[in-house]
Length: 450
Image 1 (cartoon, rainbow, N blue to C red):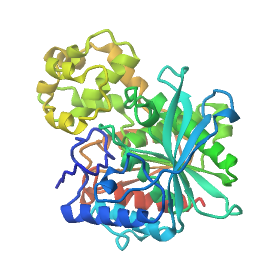
Image 2: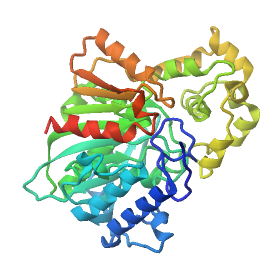
Image 3: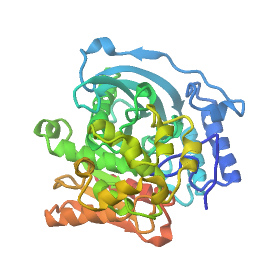
Image 4: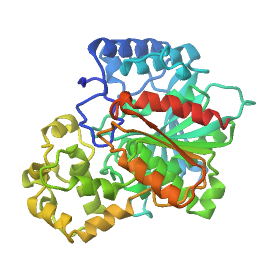
């Protein structure tokens, strides 16, 4: 069952229609608004233009001052530029916020007591420097940073959270999600990804593995600098996680760190949890690029222009995608303000979405340049040395479980003995239904390393 809302959007999923929110009945939506409003009403800090949902019910906040750190370091990857405090939540306010978040999914702290906050937290939006898709050009990006409210003598672990696909320009909730883990004592850092926030003038490099990893790594660098500049003690434990597109981000980040000797010294990973991610981009494309196949259309609609731009594929976009759809994408194609309505308008049958000649060529020996680009973005093809647990669900129709099983099979072939998995059976439901059960398990898994 699916519900729609215009005031709140949570997009955890890879290729999910952006007008569709996770299971969200009206009374649950009201509970989320009420709980979040109550939680934040007394904190004195705001989301700026982000929390229009709270402003719409008469609650407004005031942003904290912008702290400028740019003079402390020359231009470089991971340089912290600015930080602005949005909220300052006591433990009871965090409990209301987390409770409201769980209610969003029709759940509660009674069902998932592991999410009960252990502390308050402060939420900041930071800007920092990272590299563009060429791996060289320095650009400004942004992200959410949640700092647990603990004493200076209580060192805290650092956690990287990779959020799922967001087709619209509204990233309100992707910035709230890391707060679930700050409530359990983790300094939680989550890049907005290129294409959102401070880098919104650019298209989001959807499922471009190298960029997802580089923006995450540089966000971690900036988070550490913020902690150092503000006398916040982070210990030597680093956790990396992400769901859906964020699962791919988590896997790519581990792969990138482990493949570079200097990065391994800079970022010794304690444990990682990629969740329901598209690790096998090529295999997923092979399953979809067939005639009369029912698909989640956003996947191909946005992957194709992104890879065409990044890898300089020679064919015009309307060679791959229906000409009318290709023309409607334009130069500024992802994310887009009309993401909900645009996604709803896309045909779900590949014979209506894609050009017949392209499908025929792809299924034969053609499209070698595109296939090469897809292969370059498979993230499972390495041998993890990190303690890693993969999570997924057999009934996931958005990100097929074959992504997880392909990764696990490869890891087994390479004798990656520190990789384990937990695959939830069909009773746990589809992609969005899996979010809370999997997050619940990840907290338990990471807790074993603290």
